[in-house]
Length: 127
Length: 415
Image (cartoon, rainbow over all chains, first blue to last red; front, top):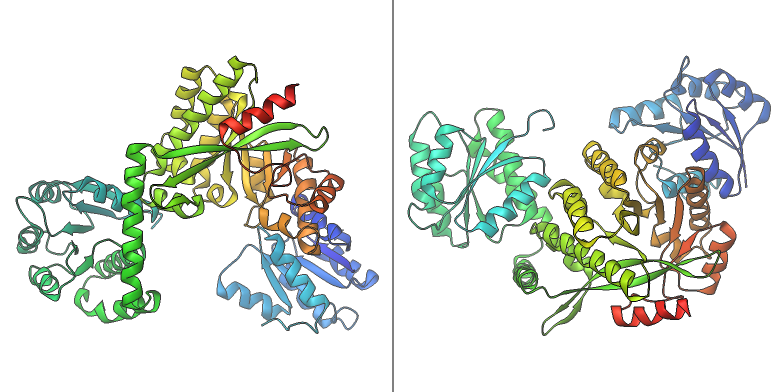
């Protein structure tokens, strides 16, 4: 099981995601804004990052771009958490370097499946 | 459509068909007007022009062809699209309909998808002004993709029509019954509540699954009276138990989203509680997660009124949909019922186990109680006990029972 960083400003959303991840056997660290998320990603080297797109200050897309430019963090898969379901919005997450996205509110099964796929890249590559 | 829903005029002499069409169209967010005759229809169009007319061909007095000709002969209203409805599918009927000026033609019984596609297309084209005649080909292609080969369609339609007639008769003759499945408190091992389940023994067929007939009742607009009957029956039953020594038992009833949106659920429950003398806290309504997420503002308001009465509220089939924590906090709920799909594989599928644990912790963090249904094995029971689930129901303890059998079980509980 893996160490997962959640970057999410809404504490209720973070708690639900953390509950889901801990129950699946993962360990979880939490950052409430993009800046501390970047620091924690560099220092703690999580196996995966759940990145809320709408954050106060620097948004999740900008943070993901920085993560993917930094050789210390570029390898860490990033899952965008987004309330935006439009095709253009999904395209934006892809262009920013996110490896996958899930739509909020979360569907539990979907979140698990996306995480499993990214943590075990041998199974099936995401489209 | 949310900003200004289109208004559709339904012209049909058959009240059942008017009701069916109203239900289908309201479900898609349209407003409707109804006329029972051609004369009434012309009157209505003149006083409040609709955006589209659904017009039955065969009516006593002025028939559909004549109504269409009159409407299309008046330049002021000739731009209102008309869809003809006919039980005849012969091309002559189609041609006559189109000659009299109708834009579209639907064969009865009306299929939901076809109705929706044709209405949507005509409204869209009307909004864009012209081109009304040019869209047919595109639409036919769309419909082809969604419909099975014609032979199968006919069989399917006939079976469906048959079921609809049988259900209308079932409602008139009151062929429904209720079975009750016990819920067990895990801490004490005792029966703590019941779920009332609708049963229909179709004459000369045998029992039909609610998964089959309830959606049809919903489509026919009959779920409202049947649902009301269920609540009435359950409250009478609680009142009887209260008096006969078994004692009052908490009973939950399944409530369809249609009852909240189309019916007068709250007033019905208020009246039934008053006439049966049952205290509100013995009644719980179960709504599915997906029905709650539709029409949320109206639903929240309705549930808050129910809660004020003292009725308990449970979210059924929880965990598969998009339910945000924010919503959970806004809904005045008492109970989460874990979707049966997770329980089925809770001891073999780690994801389902993790989701089940999450739902239990989530419920407890919100001060809600948690029920697992579909519990069939000792291993599932052990898992749920360890995870802290409050109540279970399922074949491991008891299947749904007819009243007489259930009463013996409840009496054993007391001894």
